[in-house]
Image (cartoon, rainbow, N blue to C red; front, side, top):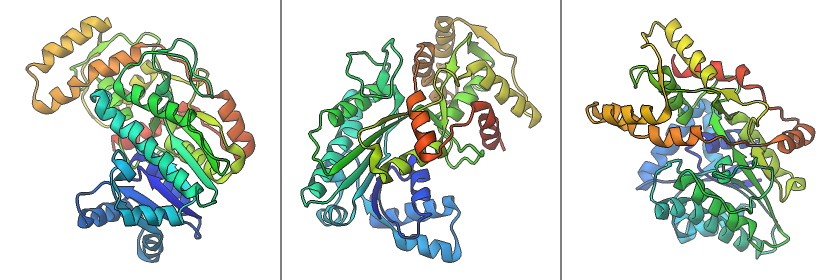
Length: 371
């Protein structure tokens, strides 16, 4: 099988490619943003090192991973015409896992990344299909497409009008709408995958530290001198990256999943309380001998006022961290329900994939961050 994969330098895309390469008959063309071919090669070598390949295994993998220089938001993925033609001629499995997870981009820039990449994917799939070949496509989205809707997010397309917390959610929702209304031919099979907050692997392995670890640092009180918003009964929906990668790889390889929308999330039954995540984080830090400030909780509005006042006199690195807190607080203070029962049951029965409980993987993932 020949694959074209975007987002290979990210947490989800990286995990997907590692899984694909377990099959010795697989070749993978990967889209990597780089300013030159030299930088392209360096970034690929860094990935191989991150994945732990060496010796004969490295030689084998290097022969089966073909890097392509481009940008997901530019027309034709920013690839040279020759590279576009190579992908079009060779690849019949397309996985789009790239995304710019920044909540406060101007909407035009957020659309360039999310909607632009969806347009490119559609154009590529249509082009391959026009040759009479079957195309298997997996699109990694986010549960954030629910925006501020009050109803639970079901395992299906969202058609209702709703507002959004940020431009990231809005642009991803617009990309999904583009896919929903796409008049794809009978040779094109599509699945959409909506992860919640993706963390490390269920065995504790963590290749990339992303937003969850920023949240842990915030909950520890280290960067706010113990000042916190009242957590009350606020809850967090997380999913291990290996579960997401396994689901995407299985779906793109199995035509029976065509047309399905998978909510890859813990759901209301398995969410974890923010206060619990805070306890786990502080206990781990204390065992590591790290001094922690006493936690002092304030109503959200008072907390944000204190953050803004503190940011005005904070060092540059702390100011940057504090500057993103209003976006995070707005997101966490809006109760959302992501339902994934149908997806979890389907993947359990058809693919033998089981989503573990958060307490079985989150503490070990937090420990990996604070080694």
